[in-house]
Amino acid sequence: MSDKPSKTYTLTNNETGETYELPVLSGTTGPDVIDIRKLYAQADVFTYDPGFTSTASCDSEITYIDGDKGVLLHGGYPIEQLAENSDFMEVCYLLLNGELPTKDQKDEFVDIITHHTMIHDQMQFLFRGFRRDAHPMAIMVGVVGALSAFYHDQTDISDPERRMIAARQMIAKMPTIAAWAYKYSKGQPFVYPKNDLSFSANFLQMMFAVPCEEYVVNPVLEKAMDLIFILHADHEQNASTSTVRISGSSGANPFACISAGIACLWGPAHGGANEAVLKMLDEIGDVSRVDEFIARAKDKDDPFRLMGFGHRVYKNFDPRAKLLAKAAHEVLADLGVNNPQLELAMALEKIALEDEYFVARKLYPNVDFYSGIILKAMGFPTSMFTVLFAVARTVGWISQWKEMIEDPVHKISRPRQLYLGSTPRDFVEIDKR
Ligand code: ACO
Image (cartoon, rainbow, N blue to C red):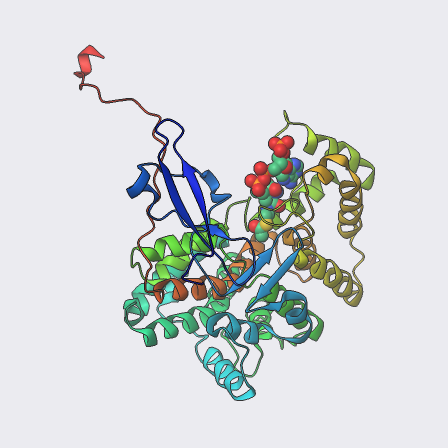
């Protein structure tokens, strides 16, 4: 970010005529931002922006989105090129370090991640404390938060070395925790990581292997898993990432912050949407009922929304949805699965994209529209969909957390409010109310 403002905005108080110069800051690309940091001190007003629709909460070098053009860049690299040519470990390195690794750097990084996938053995008793029917996201929130009790050294956030260790530990251990949450709900024994497998293949074997037979990882599923992880790795200041940053702004430890991010991700307006897409497709049931559900989505008196459609930032196709739609076809073809839900999803997408309501509001399929279909075909139960999102997004969360801690001007996040409650009044004794 350049220090010298190239332009300013002038704010005028129409009652007093007083004016205030607000500097404008320019990023390397994307819209300028008006710097209002001194506004309250100078003009005694706050800005009002519930949901942060027009507010940049930080500066960042990690990820860039142009929602109007459907562009997503990590470290400047388009997501399409990363999806085509890279792998999840490389993308993790890029998000954490700002550059793609050399061959030696990548080997070292993969080696470190591979050798940190086991979790403290005592942690299995934490899993066993949950009810068998606990939602795996509930287990994730608890167990990831509990990492701070097991890896206490990394709660010292003032040490850069410790911060990097915490980042690598979380990237490495998250698949193990996720797979064990699933195994516990199935009543199956926990499967330990295998160091001769790739990150994605290892996750699949921890999810689906059982001790009584050999599990051979299907390379098509391994590739699809890796693609899904790449596409969900980071997405700039979305709700869960902002949650992680806000939690971390108080100096909270990284494990607790990521646990907060997982809690936010769980909501159906965020990471829970792919689960909701499948439920919606089940409810629609058949192509003949698509029009009825499109009409419901448009009816303001009906709370029904087309799940997997619309995005706060993308007002054009979500580039991740395009990549996933292609992958869904490939995986289903490879597995020989004839999935009526995919046909239904395509019909729904076609009709919605031609409908005036969706066109006018720039509502396009988002990443969740196809991810549920592909994950289901791969054998994941719907309750695990958001968990997989959390496994992938961990690198984004922790990279953004590190960036914030390493920013010399970072402050505790403390938004203000427009107060609409009662003005001061005297306390009334209970028998007089
Ligand atoms: N179906 C029908 N109408 C919709 C939908 C939808 N899925 N999404 C938005 N709209 C309409 C709204 O009713 C509103 O109409 P209006 O202007 O006539 O009142 C208009 O489009 C704008 O919608 P907002 O809710 O203001 O948009 P916002 O940016 O706040 O919400 C969100 C974005 C939450 C993603 C929304 O589009 C939605 O609920 N989509 C379905 C859930 C979903 O797929 N979430 C996944 C998001 S991606 C992710 O987390 C990875």
